[in-house]
Length: 165
Image (cartoon, rainbow, N blue to C red; front, side):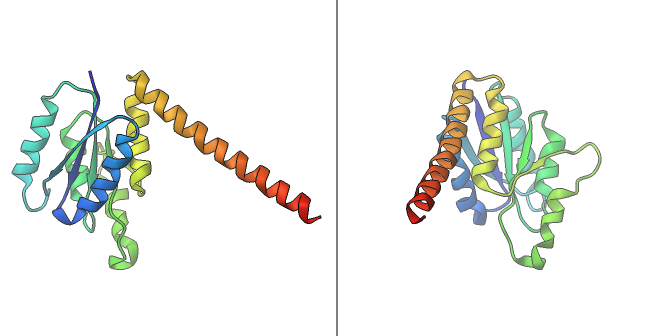
């Protein structure tokens, strides 16, 4: 059974952020479905979206995208049994203090918070890899590529320093 990541945006202005996450998920072979529903403005619609996906038996992770007052992430986490990752868009509003609405949640509500879209996708992939060997292989391949790049960069630096001496 293929895995699913539901990316729920608080508004259409979050679409570019959501597309970046979906693109990163595709590299792991993970299907992403993008939806828009606001905890503040359309709670019944957002709840209907969650009920639809909760009825879907596929393994899933939810990624929420909402800025300013991020009620969406807590709202989603309180309604679903699957992991929730809050990935709020970067904002200069309020001097960046709006991030606290993603970091501080009430007891019993525990979405993870990851600020970079590609890293939110990676965390979702690692969670889904617990039950999907293909996704796990793609995560391991990414980690291997990242380590190899560091080693190549270090070797090139050492070679350049030796030539300078």
